[in-house]
Amino acid sequence: MELTGLLPDFGNLAFTILAFLAALTVIVAVHEYGHYIVGRWSGIKADVFSIGMGPVLASKMDRHGTRWQIAAFPIGGYVKFRGDANVASGSADEDAMAAMSDEERRHTMHGAPLWARAATVAAGPVFNFILSILIFAGLALATGVARDPLSVATPLNVPGMEDGLKPGDEILSIAGIETPPLAEFGTLVEKLPDTAMIDYRVRRDGRVIDLVATHPFPALVGSVSPKSAAIDAGLKEGDFIATVDGVTVPTFNTLREIVVNGDGSPLTLGIVRDGTPMEVTLTPRRQDIPSADGGFETRWLIGITSGMVFEPATRTPGVWESVVSGAERVVYIIRASLSGLWHMITGAISSCNLSGPIGIAQVSGQAASLGATSFISFIAMLSTAIGLLNLFPIPVLDGGHLVFHAWEAVTGKPPSDKVLNVLLAIGLSLVLSLMVFGVTNDLFCP
Image 1 (cartoon, one colour):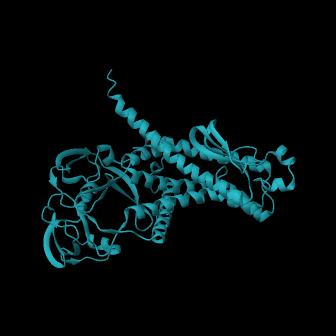
Image 2: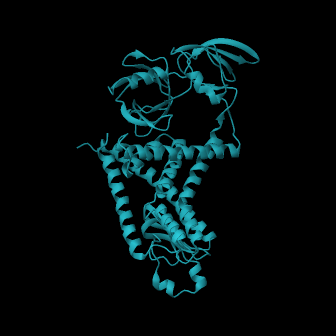
Image 3: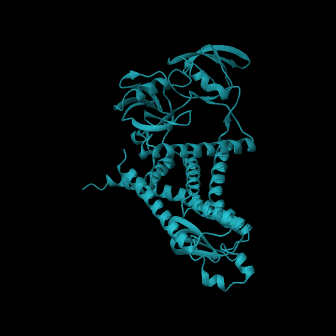
């Protein structure tokens, strides 16, 4: 038996696992730190802050009396507050609580005022959202945003650009249509003819010049989506798709129409990568994607986005602009996630859209393989998803605890231990069932 054939698969598996654990560790650490720091600010003391579960590998006691530790299994983490009977803070250690003075009980999760307990519980998901916002804002600051008026920073080395656009060109019009502000650029793209070469009017060195160059959106791979036909086939950012099944594709819009109307038939793409022609065969996959009206539509997709024929000149956005942009992206992810969940429940879209840990790990590995920016963006998206999941009103999740606190605020007393135990058991069953369902999807969905 040839061992060499197994090595790449093992390497990919190890890379996928490491990428997934790295992403999960960051997200869990931030989530638990939210619980810890807001609890401390609220007067609730923590005995243990753990990254990972199981046997302790290393630990250190801080001046606040909290033991910070790293455990053997990097599959989660927890904060054990003073007076807790277990790491889930679901019940109090009655013997320990009975031996405390009133002042000492105030510093426990179960003896603190309702507002302090609720704030401490809510802080975990909130910190996940804050992490996502900061990551998206940081990426905007690091990469910049395209500036008005639309100008060329670097033309790409693709067919038709040899004597075309040059660095510094300000795009005045395309195909005779005046270039709109960037916020409205999508309206221009829809009006352009699907021709490989197109007329440009540019301002170059103070002079207005008319020239012919490649369509601004040729069949060029701008990005590759994880867990897609494109990434499985080995497509990369910057690949220029010249033909599909031997037929020339002048624009990305033409490529999209071929894929959408192909009814899932295998496609052979003739691509040019770094000047070298090659062929790639892939099969589009039927996917449910968010639509402009807030719903979903089902299309055949190969999993790429379009790239512009030139890199636009950018500007560095302000800090507040970047933060607002990051927050808007987090809100979009939350809305799309809730919409997707509702459409799955009603049967409007396939339940295969719900991934389990295997699928998430696969996406994390593929995102990491696409580069640091892709992986960091994935961490931000996963952090948002985990924050949202934890807010679901299911016992054992943070959202369930917040429901208990809301009940206490209305009735003046928490649910009885008997009721609480039953609800926690139901919640645990729901979470485990959801995990099994997700793993089933990972294994059997196409």
